[in-house]
Each structure stands twice: as C-alpha cells, then as structure tokens.
Length: 167
Image (cartoon, rainbow, N blue to C red; front, side, top):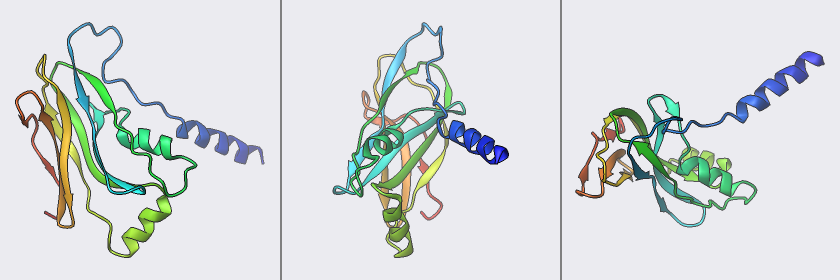
C-alpha cells in the first residue's frame, strides 16, 4: 500500500510540471512579442498554431491556456490566445499545428469517425529581429497541415514551414 501511495504522489508531481520561461533570468537584452494563433471552429473545437518549446524547454502556449480555461466546462472549448516575449537571439523552436476539442472524448470520436484533421509539428531555426512582432501562423485542411512563424512587421515568413507528412 505504501508503494502505491508513493507512486501516486510521484505521478501527481509530474502532472504539475512547470513550463519554462523563454527569457532566462538575468537576460537584459531586447525581446520581441510572439503570439500563438487560435481559430475557433464553433464552441467545441479550434485550430491551434503554437510555439511548444524554445531550445528544448517547453513553454506556456495557447493549447495549455485553453485546456486550463476549459477544465470543467464539458464539451465547451474556451479558446485562449497566448503571447510571450522571446529574446532577440538565434534559437530552435518547436511549432505545432493541431485541432483541439473541449473534451478528450470528442477528439476520440472525431478520430474514429475519420473526421479528425491532420496535425504538424517540428523544430525550426528562428532568429527574431529587434523591433519586429511575430505570430505563429498555419493551415489545417483535410489534406494536411503546416505551421510557421510570420514576421508581422514585414508580412513575410520568419521561419521555414513545418509540414505534415500527409501533404
């Protein structure tokens, strides 16, 4: 019994893992705002284009914020945008394009019925420029998904596109 309680405690601590800040403590250099994009598809689902991690460290994003805001609300997905400051330096970012639903069972049934949309995820090089603003952009269709970071100041891609294998 004691071993079971210890295992449950360890698992509960892992579930509370914190996400890192992409701007490390003591960094005094310039930063740029970079926002995730959320496209609502009704009250129960949305398309998300987010930064999942920076240089291997998971960071807070719109998927995490939306899951937290939707907790206890049944099938309703409370789509929440996330913006963070990124340091002006070369980095590797993991991007994700995916559909999220308000309840996990909803996603399971969409997948079983063949109506689940494809997702894309992968790591790209990103070097933000001081003074510019960025947004994670993408496309998700029945035929595939792609995601990239767009420079909003110049209205041009700032990274390579991550494309799903189905495209």
